[in-house]
Structures are given as C-alpha cells and as structure tokens.
Image 1: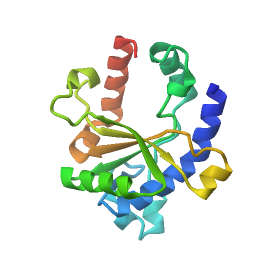
Image 2: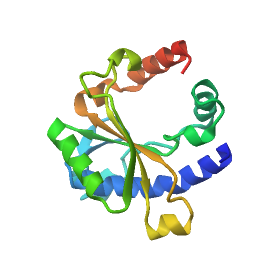
Image 3: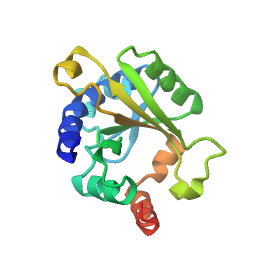
Length: 185
C-alpha cells in the first residue's frame, strides 16, 4: 500500500470512526472534548445540537507526521501506520473505560487488531514521557466500509482516563512532541 492509499482510506474511515465513537461513548459514559477544552459526557452532549457542534474530534494525522513516523520508525513502510485515522474518548474511571472496551469487543462490526496498554503498571512511562492510555487498533466492517473497500483499514481509538486527558493539553502535547523528537520517533 502507498501512503496516498493509506490517507484516502483514513479520510473515508474518519466519518465512520467518529460515528462509532458516539455509539461507544453513549454506552460507556465516555466523554468528549469541546473546542474550549472542557470535557463532557457524550450522552449529555448528544442531546444538545449546540453542544454537539462544539465537539473537538481528532483530525486525520497530518501528512508531515505520518511521513516522519514512516521514515523514523517503520522503515518507509506506510502499511505500518495504524493511527492515521484516530479518535479519543475520555473516562472518569477505570470502570467506565473497561465498559467501553467491553462494548467494543461486543460490537460485531469491530475487529480488534491490537491493544497497546499504557495503563498497565508494568508499562514504563519513561517511553511516553509519563503519558498513559489504552490504544485500541481496530477495523470496522460494515456494508458501507465494504462497499468503499476500507473495511481492512486499521484505525486507532485512544481510551484515556480524565486525569491524563487533562495533562494532554496543548502545552502537554508540545512537551511530548519535543520528547518524541529527541528520541527520534
């Protein structure tokens, strides 16, 4: 697969993943971030078109970062990029996060490809500058994704505890980018 193909598939899957995230968040007390940075339960946001319009969903990964990652970490192989299409849901508790994972596992249209559990106490947070989440790489297989031939595209859903999401502010993310660049990742 070429990088152009990965990006085309990611842009198509972006809408599908966002819609699925709304379902999963509603079933598990998932929260979303608004443009002003505040977190709110999706179940409350969904009842208000005005609030829903202020949601800040993740964008498709920038082409610059994808190329950088492909060159630095993946030996120029674009098929190893599993987070070009990505979203994040935030949870107040581990129980709510686990509920979301159960909802994902029960969703017949989802195939979980990989779990990267940065919440595991055995995970060295030195590798992520202290940041922790549960990254779920998944495929979504529906009649629509099959008809568009994107059902094999791997997306990433980050399940984040509220405490870490609050640290993942613009400044926090800038510090992480500096850390990642210093490591050459």
